[in-house]
Length: 423
Ligand code: AMP
Ligand code: GLY
Image (tube, rainbow, N blue to C red; front, side, top):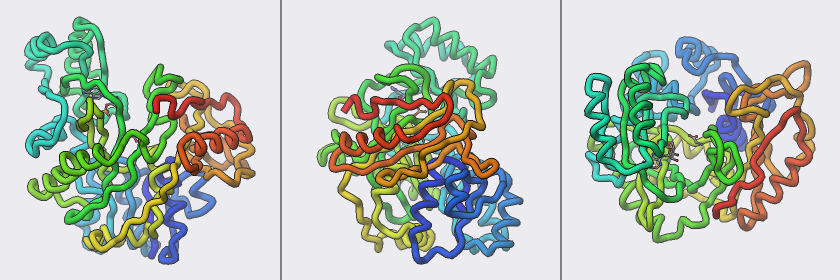
């Protein structure tokens, strides 16, 4: 089978690394990919939203399956584009269609879905600029901190958590009236604040049945002790030590099942990953967000723990025979630590030579923002590489990642030295 992965990050390198292990794989393409995927697959320099260029590649190379990494092309309807085209409709696409991708593309749509299907989540109301005053009144009924969310995709920056009422009102106005996040904040969801510890559950569904994949916890803030600005994710651990059987059963019954059933009831055919962001309040899980893809860097710890042939699993998603797959999970803990460019998540430099990573044997090096230049591997993004290790517990796994990170160098390299500090 010939497979194309869409995307360029650590998530896509991990998917490529795993698919590459399958005897069922013939040729593997990644568009656009990074220096890591270039070493194990064929990179094709195509923008993830250039569907016509993707179509040309699929036809030329006889690609049978397209695995979509990031949310953008899904929200833009790449799956529907394939289904509507007589030359492409035989190609399997792993990733939901445009309507269901709205679960990530619109916070308001996701909240309506959650309430319609009685899935635990924070109370909310949504507002547009013509009812700004009602937004102010609603804020006055809430206790701080105030949670303001841009409805649309805002590159992970669209959520504001504010302690001061006046500041919350000012930000609401900036979002709605001054288009702080462009058209993404034309609608703003104001939500009750939930205090608790976060974790993520990943589900793979074929639209009929589903498999719950290993859970993971990621570390979003740039600074140690969860301080400073939000990033795409600085590290991850799977499994999550506090997610015991009681919590897992609640997540399964109260959240995963009604989500998959809800998709069916709403007539939203879904073939792909559902990433459910959860917060544990007391002993109970609440949904804070849906993503319609795998997480990054969560993929770097979840996928390595799956023992099955991933080509077979994806084929079962395409054929709607996922129920027949016996998912085998590695019992060990996997951890990943993200190496980032100095300055990230604000301005940072690119093009720095990366050395030492080739020598690492007992960790897996997943490239994120890397590129090849004159035979060297150089930095090409804020998040540069994720170093994944296995251990009997997260401490043992992390120790391996940190020991191996000491062998890797690039100018202004930064990483968090306290992944797992809260566990
Ligand atoms: P989201 O983009 O919806 O995942 O939100 C980004 C981050 O904001 C989450 O990872 C949480 O840390 C935080 N957050 C979102 N919604 C809430 C909420 N209702 N209560 C507390 N924290 C929240
Ligand atoms: N690590 C969070 C995300 O992928 O959205």
